[in-house]
Every structure is written in C-alpha cells, then in structure tokens.
Image: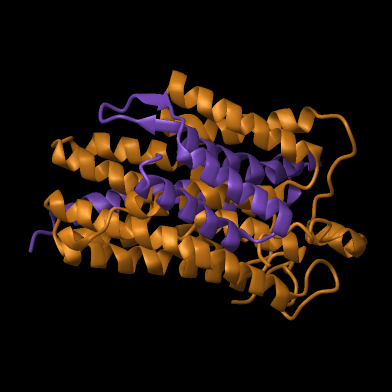
Amino acid sequence: MTATGGQPTGPETGTAAGLPLPEARRRLAFDIAGIVVSSGAFGVVFGLAAQKAGYSLVETIAMSTIVFAGASQFAAVGLVVAATPWPAIVLVTGLLNSRHALYSAALAPWLRGVSWRERAAMAHVLTDEAFALTINHFSRLGRADPTGYWIAAIGSTFIPWNVATILGFLLGGAVVSPQSIGIDVVFPAAMAGLAVGLITGRRALVAAAVAVVVSVVVAIAWDPRAAAVVGGLVGPLVGLAVPGPAEPIETPETLAAHPESAGHDAGVGVAP
Amino acid sequence: MNVGLVGLAVVMGAVTYPWRAVPLLAPGIERLPPPVLAYLRLVGPAILAALAATNTFITTDTSGTASFHVGIEWLAVGLCIAIVAWRRNLFLGLIVAVVVAAVARQAGLA
C-alpha cells in the first residue's frame, strides 16, 4: 500500500523521526499477537452462538464479513432469536457502532495523504482493535504507515474473526468457553494496555481517567451501549482543559517543520 | 441453505460503514483548527480506557441492566497495565492477565 495525494504520509522505508519502520512494525507484530487470541476466541463464540440461533453458515459468514463488528453481531443474534423486527435490529446496530466515528475522526489527520479509494477500503476494517493498534503504531513511528494499518486491521481481527466464526459454527458444542480459560480478559486488558501506550502527558492521562469514570457512570445510570462513546467524547474535553503546555500534534506539516519532535513518546511502546 | 439473514447483514453493514468512513473521507480534514486536532489526539487514550473500563467494571444481565462488578478481572487488567507501564510489553501483560484469571477461576477464587 502506498500513500498518494498532496500530503503523503512519508516513504515506508524508515524515518529519522520516531522509531525506524522495521522496529515499529516488530512492536506492532507483538501487539497483534495478543489481539489475535481475543479475536479468535470471540469469533468462535460468535459462530457457535449464530449456529445455535439458527443461522445458516452463509448467513453467519455474511455477518462477520459484511457487518464485521462483534458487539452488534452478538446483539443481533439475541434479537433475531427474539424475533425482533429488522428495523429495530438495524437501529441497535447503528447505535452500537457509532463509536467508530471517533476512531475514524482520530485517524483521519494521519491518513489524509492516503488516496480516497484506499481510505474508503480502510474504513470497512476499522474496529476497536484496529484503531488501538494503529494509533499506537503511528504514534511510535511519528507518522502514518498505511501498510501497518492493513497489517493491524486484517491480521489482528479480520482474518482471525472470520476464520474463527466458521470454526465456531462447524465445531459447535466442542467449543470451550473463553471465560473458563481466562481469554475473556484479553480484550479489556489489551485496550487498557494500548491506552497506556498513548498516555504521553497530563492531558492524555486526565482524558483517559475521566473517560473511565464517565463511561462507568453512564453504563450504570443510563445505557452500557453508550458508555464508551460518551466517555470517549467527554474525556478529551476535560483533558484539553488541563493547564500546561500543549502536547505536540504530529502531522506531516509539523513533522516537516520540527522533525525532532516526532516520536516523543516512542519510548512508551507496548511491545518489547 | 437459508440466506434470509444475508439481507439483514447487508443492511447492518450499511448503517455501520458511514460511522467508520465519513470522518475518514470528509474533505477538509487537513484544515481542522489545532484545538480540534488536539482533541482528536486525546480521543485515542480516552476511548480505549473507556472500553477497558466498561469491560472490566460493568456486567450486564439478560434484561440489559448494567451493574458495577468487582472480580478477578480487576487484578488481571491491573497487572497488564502495570506490566505495560513497566516493561512496555503488551504481549507479556496479556499472558499474565489470562493466566491470573484462569488460575483464579480454576481455584475457585473468582
């Protein structure tokens, strides 16, 4: 994959700013390894749940390839079993997946040098995991790496999720519960660990802490489906209000003007 | 083989894709003012922390009612955070988290 357009994301051959590309990609590969376990385990569970709910194999595969959003796929299984009308299922899907707009907006400044067509394709595989891995990878690298995005999105989630979905459907009752072997903690632990890698100053720390409190309160007092979105919106607002020097914003322009500022958090990676 | 739900998958995909694509494809994203870019930079740690928190501290019953949850997941996720902060190694953190949760459950401690 190559970047095209007026503001390229830079050659993918390494950079003096941030980590060198091979080192950044090595760390990305370690990060992906942990996520694959989580994606695979829950893909199996989804396949099993879909089979129990009466989905055919084709329908199950269609859900995992076309929708490709775990929470809404699980929700749909329950709603289909309850004979919920399609419009209601679609509405729930839209609400559950609204958080992806935040991911997309946060990645947009990094990927603006990528062609429109490639960004349109990238959007389909943008998940919680893809965002978490990619934003850490770009931060460590100090610039965008479109190929790294594809490696993260497809390697960590799309392939494992879809292969596991089929396995879960076909294996049926032979599937072991993720809870029984502790794999259910991989997703929250991975999200927390990747958040730590992005905390580079007081503002980010406050944004994350406020997001935790707000999301928990919203989940209990209002709706757990809205919790992450509200936390993700409110946290950064409070973070911005924290006095102190603004954290550098790494864009192609700022990197060109101050390359020494890039990768300021390169030492706060999450892989060995 | 039944394929009726393929249509539902297409419609669900159709309502999901715009959330993923519109900000990424919107023209003028490169002209956003610095405060907006600063805000977007904080979205990453905030929403990842929120996802971690809701998947650690919250349980939802079959009726959809959420409640505060205290369990071994706290220790597992906390250890992962500590390892990432200390060793900068997510993979090791995830292994420790899984082992702690699995052993505690097998031992009947959680």
